[in-house]
Amino acid sequence: MRILFLSYWGFTDPLTTATVLPHLRLLQARPEVAAIRLVTVERGSDALQAPVLQLPFDNQKISFEPLLSPPGQGVLVTKTNDFRRFPRELAAQARAFGADFILARGAPAGALAYLVQRQTGLPFYVESFEPHAEYMRKSGVWRWYDPRYIFQQYWENQQKRRAAGLMPVAENYRRKLIAEGVPAARIITVPCSVSLSDFAFDADARRRMRQQLALPPNALVGTYVGKFGGIYYDDEAFQLFKQTADFFGPNFRLLLLTPQAPAEVQAKLAAAGFDPARAIVTRVPFAEVPLYLSAADFAYGLHRPTPYVSPIKVGEYWANGLPVLLTTGVGDDSGIIAAEGGGAIFDLTQPGSVGQALEGIRAQLADPGHRQAIRALAARHRSVERAREAYDALLPAVKEQNPAGYQV
Image (cartoon, rainbow, N blue to C red; front, side):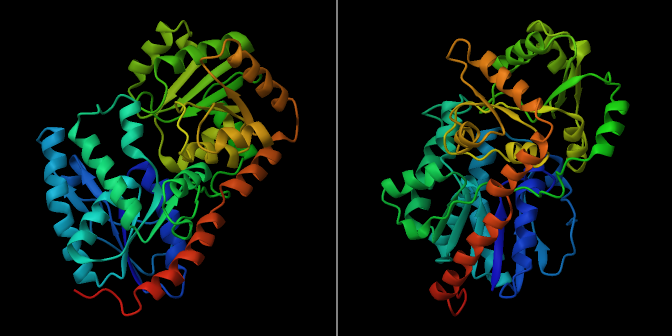
């Protein structure tokens, strides 16, 4: 069995590192998988000098052939050119590689896989399938009349009709897809999984990092990893940080690991009335994120209410044993926290909600065994075993549907 694995993110994107590479490792370990071709979409400087395949595990079966989208044109022109050119290039790759099917990561990659299938008949599956077009519209990134929204919405509907299998990240989206008429046998829920060992709490790292960051010995540290804006809170997030500082008092410190410019973030903190001197704003390599999480005491999940997601950062926080202060209505995670712990839920539309959630965080931090209990939550809901189980169900079905392999 030969798999063409398609990611819409670039090879060096943290989402590729966090969500794609662990699945490649699982797939190459399967005896029925003979070879995997990883295809990423490279933009900006990475499109001018494509990255080299470097994996954090022994590579036995994986080759790499990115799609290149050079800079220099407007977004709409670039996207139009990409979706005219990439399906042809993918079809040519699939023929040369002898792919049995495409495994696409995310609905935008699934759109490309659908366009290849329309040309060639090559079966495709979509991991991390979600209503991407609606998320982008509701977050204000796209308008209803934006061609990107119109086409992505159409392509998602075609994926529901024509994909051999869909793997949404939230159980409530699986139920919605079934209600829309997608056969249940074609849907397997696979939450975004994390490496429990890579993100495990490290007491030595905690002592070392807190000293390196010049944190007071009695500092209570809240951390956030990621961007602001779009599907994440922006101005609201900084008001939340201010409320947290007021609640916990002078010992509170904020640790922000973000790709956004530190000066911009510090200015927003000051505008919200948060003393920038009590915040550390930095960008760190993905491999170092667990060290910083070990230095923290709890974490923020700043998704706007988004019912069909599975934020990878929530799984990483849980794997490190951190209680998560999370918005209501975020995938399955808000419900898990409400039912099983692992943090507290807030609703910005409800007065007093943030204060109640912070009380819940304080109560959990008072339990000396809270980090071990929350790590067990990650093992139940975010282990890579969920992906392994999905592949157990998926790959035999591929053989049955396409026993002779892909023929053009």
